Image (cartoon, rainbow, N blue to C red; front, side, top):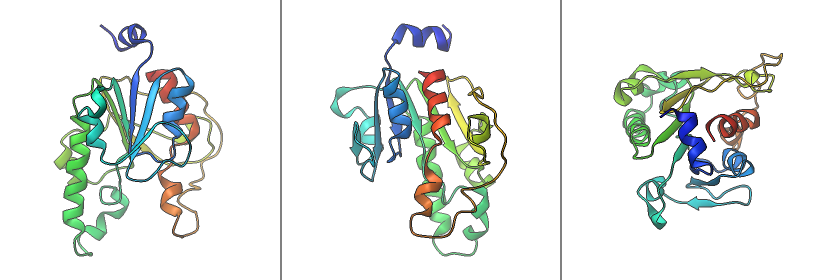
Amino acid sequence: MTFNKECNQLQSMRVLVACEFSGTVRDAFIARGHEAMSCDLLPSETPGPHYQGDIFDIVNGIGGKQRDLMIAHPPCTYLCNSGVRWLHEREGRWAEMIAGAVFFRNLLTAPIPYIAIENPIMHGYGQQIIGIPPTQSIQPWQFGHGETKRTCLWLKNLPPLTPTNIVAGRTPKIHHASPGPNRWRERSRTYQGIAEAMAMQWG
């Protein structure tokens, strides 16, 4: 059975959005009639179904509900290629990288039929631990946002995302944002156009 036929039979999917505090992806699926909830160690910024705590509480069936689809945004601090130099220059980073890669791998191999995990370009050390290369990479300008921020997707039983609105603009706005205590929050948010594409194409 193909992905689209199986999802049409499900009609309303039980969707888990892991490591999300903004509610952006969660709300995009809810808007399309799905039973979606987000989960993060932080509280949700917007009202909606949210579990504040360990994602594996939900993955392992807390509340007796199994999920049909999980979209995860695990922390990339120690896995992204842009920060690989610090693994050798800052004490403790290597152990943090290994822990981050194992967490990523555990999400990817979770007992959920359909899984998508997003992260920036990953360095080779992390990829070696995870053992599975990304399925595709996408850019915000393919989904209506005129800027660049290459994001890789690891997909399990899901088709690659198809661009929905290619627009002009190739500026890395997020990377040029001024340093500050909340910069990481803005860098971690999913673009609205990408969230809506996920809900439309995977929901």
